[in-house]
Image (tube, rainbow, N blue to C red; front, side):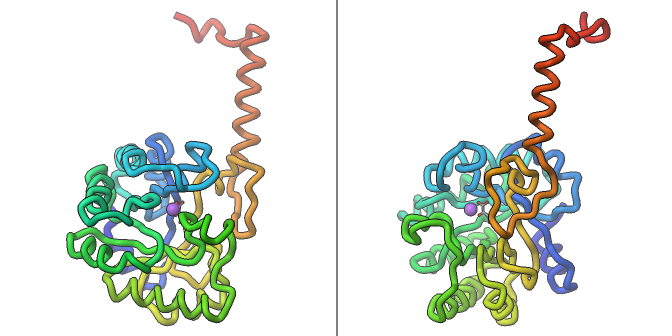
Length: 262
Ligand code: KIV
Ligand code: NA
């Protein structure tokens, strides 16, 4: 069972941390046997599991369902539940209901994007005994504000703001922060200034750990190729070969054979 203490100990020891997203029981079972420490049940589920064009359409009930499935498949891992779009921008009651749904579904921490307007809530969640992971840089829930999925922290001002926001998250009691699509030089500056566990995606090697979306690193989609993505499998080709081999066997009458019937 990996706990927040294990993660902090590894950070202190300078051991790199690993996180992957996961949304389903079957994949979680396999991931649970791996060396990956953290599983993020990300709201990227909206895109990779449900085919949406952004992360905006997914709701907290659906997120909780994904968390429950992953928690059953990977009981030994540290599971982070992602707070979906607007689920933490309402009344304190409603915001805490969303936190409650994810935690009672089996998460060990929650993640939310941005800082401005979330300060009081983050403090309250932390004081409630729930570890909070921040998320800065390219925060996909703000895609309409950004005008697309773009690298953040390019201007001097944007860089100062990301550093300020990281230190605010630290002051509010967060244990970690995801830095998404942040220039390497800024990441280095950030890491030197904060004690938070820094997890990067497109943020270079200076961070304490990395995160990738499982389907992306397994190559489910040959069409999605951002610079930061390293593919460890070509699932699209492997799956396609298997599907076609099955279709061929059925059509030729080779499947099922004598050993496969009752
Ligand atoms: O939802 C997600 O997959 C994420 C990661 C990209 C950090 O938030
Ligand atoms: Na997310």
